[in-house]
Image (cartoon, rainbow, N blue to C red; front, side, top):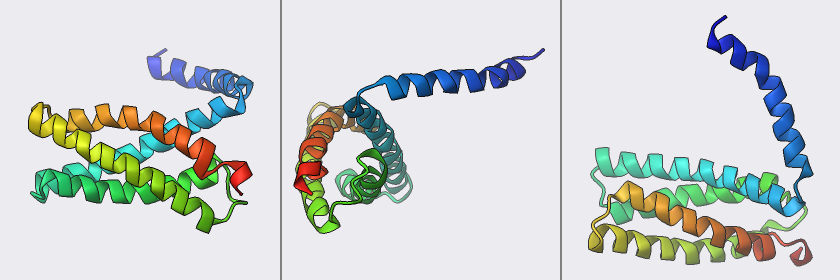
Length: 154
């Protein structure tokens, strides 16, 4: 019996255990996990666009980062609104400006830290993206959880 058969046979059990673990978590932790998945997918989009622009398009890194962040922001808003926070009962015209305010502030912080990491600390640009993104994730989650998508704000 080869290894692929073993892993496929256990997949159902593993997924059942993960689901049981997930539903046993408080709602805030469930949302944080979803937020992490959403953020991870946005980061993948962000990095892919950034990489193509800088490596193949020869676009300067801060302009590339601005463009890649912009695309990731719209992906992030939609997925967080519909899946992470299930805030579809709220009005987009209330949620999006709040979301955008948080994102603009953290994106500016992101660009500042990118400039410091690459230009002054001489770190690899992709390393800086991942380090900064980890920090920004926590700031974004709490701001969105308690303000952008807060149920009492609806």
